[in-house]
Amino acid sequence: HMITGCQERFDKIRADAGEEAGRNLVRMKSYEEGKGQRRAWILGKQMSNDSIKELIIPGSLIVDFAVPHVPSVIARDYRYVNGAALSYSRRDTDLTFCHDVPSTMPACLAATIIHAREDRGEHEIGEIDVEDVEGWWDRAVKHGFSLSCIEPNQTKCTTPADGDSKANVSTRAKIA
Image (cartoon, rainbow, N blue to C red; front, side, top):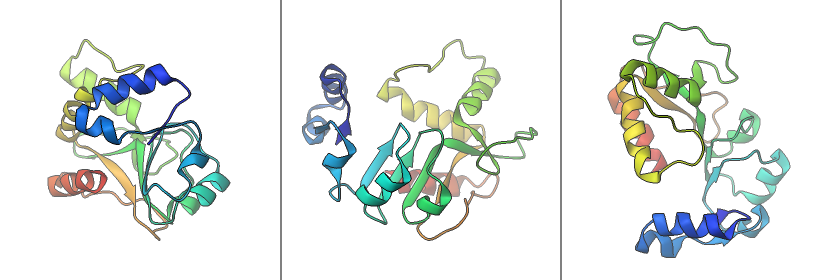
């Protein structure tokens, strides 16, 4: 299910998903249409705490790209992935950050670092091509970045050990 007010955008994303996956994609116009039915939610815009508690079943997966993020007091009741905050290897990065999620940096800053390290002449501002996501994830892992996840009933973010590629892979598998 995808919430969007734009039929043209939905049709394009559905077509890009391919025939089989596209058949499974249903357009919704509000969060309320998915109440209690969905076990996986991808949030690209802020959702109120009350709406999350009312509409999303505890234990469901929430992949959150919104800023500000779902507060940890709410996120701990879900399988929560903060897609906008990436953990980093202190071995590869000696920067100090003041970020709202401890020991992470904004995903946009991680992308900037990757661009600089690889001398890339492109950017990912605006709509993204779904086909490019896997390549960007591989670049992020190569440069020591990983998702920082909160599992159900945890009160703080957990980060894979620096350089632990198995932790990076298992984090990826939890999302899939």
